Image (tube, rainbow over all chains, first blue to last red; front, side, top):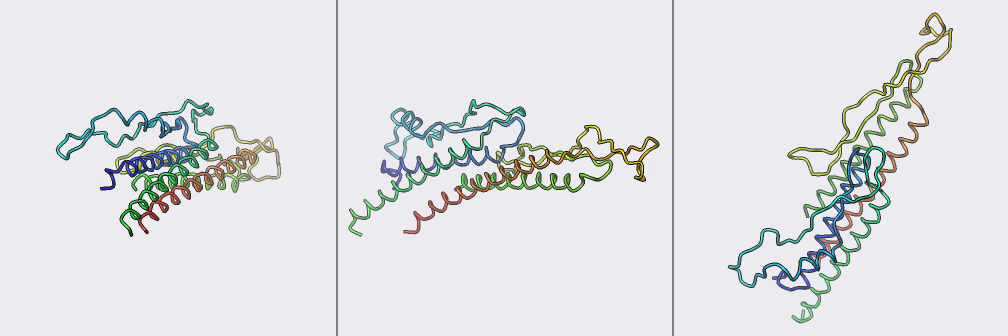
Length: 126
Length: 130
């Protein structure tokens, strides 16, 4: 039921994006000393969301066909940062920044979700 | 939820690998004065396997540093040869201390990420509470 409301849908996709980004940051930091490892990151949510909404098939009935990649999770790409002599391109400082960014985005998404929930509660009179 | 638990597992593997590296550093420092000791080197590699979390890190096989051993002049030492020299270790304390610093810095970074992922997942859980 919640998925059909746009506010819930957008905020949950946003939270999922933040979670995926945070998981990539964790992988990067864990591999900060692995020789030959390239740092990975996700494109920003605002870019991917604008690109993914609008085009694509709309499902207005249960019988409609579902596209396999409806989650809209973008693919991670390797950054083009400078690499150390051992071929590793992870910068811990940059990863810290990305981690905070992801956390803020996640908190934002959850705040929107909670707010929308409050709105529904109010309209139901509870 | 699996994204978060995967992230937690990956940062745990990072912490474990850094701790293991720190263990070898302390082994090298402890043996800095052992005659004939070669310093142990450990490398990191990405874990690849069917049941492993993607992106997790582990320490590779230990190798010995093949640079030449220190020649120490001490004719009174029972290990010394006719010319009065014996083989020391090839541990350079400066390098070991720098390595230990790097390991602890990376460990802390992993710990920070771990904490942050936990905060994010508990914030998600707070949604259910109300």
